Amino acid sequence: MTDNNKKFILMFPGQGSQYINMGSSFLEKNKKYLNYFEISSEIFGENILDIVQNKNEKGSLLENTRYSQIAIYTLSCALNDFLCNELGVYKKSVVSVLGHSLGDYSALYCCGAYDFAKGAEIVSFRGKIMARSPQRQDGNMLMAAVLGCDIESIAEVLASYRDRVFIANKNDAYQTVISGYTDDVIAASAQLKSCGAKRVIPLKVNIASHCPLMSQAASELDDYLKKHANFKDIETSFFSSTELKFIDKENIKEMLVRQLLNPVNWKGSIEIMADKFLKNCPEGCAEEVSFIEIGPGKVLSGLVKRILLQKNLGHVNIFNTDSMDEIERINI
Image 1 (cartoon, rainbow, N blue to C red):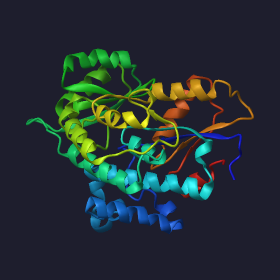
Image 2 (image 1 turned 30 degrees about the horizontal axis):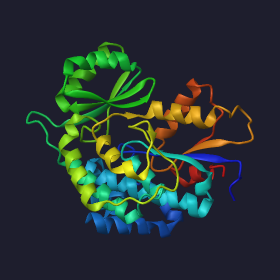
Image 3 (image 1 turned 180 degrees about the vertical axis):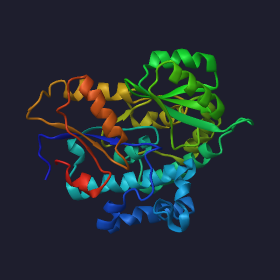
Image 4 (image 1 turned 180 degrees about the horizontal axis):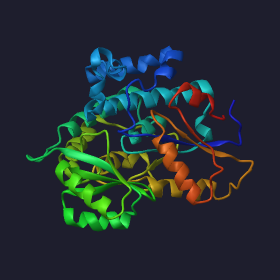
């Protein structure tokens, strides 16, 4: 049973969090949730679990946007329902739900905007159109994480790469993701290192998301959503990490389209969460607010920890669902 005083902020990761055999310990102990992969595989047209589990050496496909998006969505939704159905994370205990990029789709499922199959249809379409987005003749697309450099300095460097490299994610004070054409991102990365960036790490994606280079994909997604998506009433508060505000049913379609073109502001989102839900929650307070990352990896958990430490909120609980060991540590 959930302690009535405990509240939760649920977070869903995006592309780049995928890895071979993700969710293996969870699925091994909870085989009924394999059904989610059966449903998404039928919709997608290929066996997603075979790719996740590297059957017949198919695991390399997880690096492809087309496959990683549906795989992450499927696992995240299965984990969400396990927490709600088995662990007792009740909707009334959830004060906010938010996703990072692709994670918005898992978050919207969590909020009741659509059923699992409808979400899988949308995510399958999104991944396919993004994978075939127009690419320049002399290079593909790339995203890279810039570590240890403030966003103002990054913007100054990128001024020389106008319409070629963009700021895509503002993850925390010293982690920013840039997005653009591969050759230009590599050149900008070298310049950023010479300007003080500690590291620039290429991400496990083959697209340039959250920038104007996704304009064709955004247009196709807009047409698709208008024809095929009718969203239900949202059961829990959904917060958009690109719009930096709570979104209702009427604005979901427009938000999802703009999301492809606009940067994710994760730092700003978590600061808003902290100001809204944690400002009256000093260490040892009776009403405890915890963050739970639902999906593969621990990327969002690490970012939230650093952001909250900067706001003197290091005592707040942050959990993840990357393995059964981690799931069992969640304090419901």
